[in-house]
Amino acid sequence: MWKICRSSISGLLVLASTPAFAQRDGAPAASYPARPLRIIVPQSPGASTDLTARLVARALSEAWKQPVVVDNRPGAGTIIGTELVTRAAPDGHTLLVVASGITVNPSMHKRMPYDTGRDLAPISQLTRFSNLLAAHPGFPAKTLQDLLALAKAKPGTINYASAGLASGTHMSMELLKAMTGIDLVHIPYTGGGPAVTAAIGGQVQLNIGTTVGVLPHVRSGKLKALAVTTAKRSAAVPELPTVAESGLPDYAATAWFGLLAPAGTQGAIVAKLNAATVKSVHLRDMQDRLAAEGTEAVGNSPEQFAQIIRTDIAKWAKVVKASGAKAE
Image (cartoon, rainbow, N blue to C red):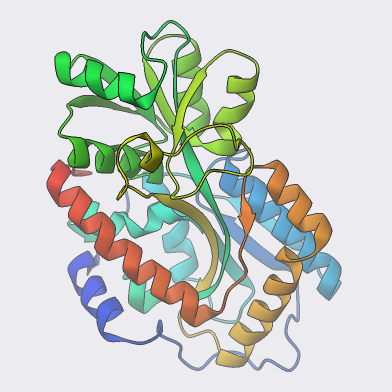
């Protein structure tokens, strides 16, 4: 268990009232990076977040001629690993690669060991991507419309697996439930891998996961795809309709991975990190690798990334409230 020390509510207030995340005095930027860097990933090795972090680590290492080590610290819905970053020295040598689920945690937890707005400095949004809703091959629905009709006819009898409570995949389905009024039973797992395995094995009827995590099993026939969650079709599976195209035009749930540092990291170091990161994600080789994983390279500014985080926190707070979901 983690130590409770700050209120997530105060984090929302700070986040909403400041134009950018907090930055205090830090180490000089001229000699940065002065030693090997560590990227903490608050999820298990092999997860989509981990794969993206390793691509970024390799690119930064090649650019700066410094080792960049990926350190996996899973647990508590990314809170454990994220807290380690918030408590690290704000010198740019300890970084965080995290998924968009970080914007759900302030609404899911009454208390958190850090303040998302005060204790983290956004560097850049790395990628954005869709989640993919799939079903076991034996499940009767062939389309999302079929699923909605079946769920309305038999409320509370259909279950779905997600990567965990408060994950982006969980919230994607809770948004669908809120917009349609259907009653689906959530079965949270400890990551996308176990969730998709449960769907393949028939322990659950549906799975909502990242495109990169689910699509190979759709291609092999172990799962059947119903829809993607983004407003536009995924380049990785252009033949698959979006939820919006399937009768819910206002539905959109875009997932992302981002790079952050401890708050207090000197502005010049943040700028140096941002420039190197943006350059790396727009390299042709990097874009090809990311596309192969079903993600789209972004590489925006710290201010743009901070605004995305603020917007997502507000959006998912409404969904969490409507769903009644709580971590405790």
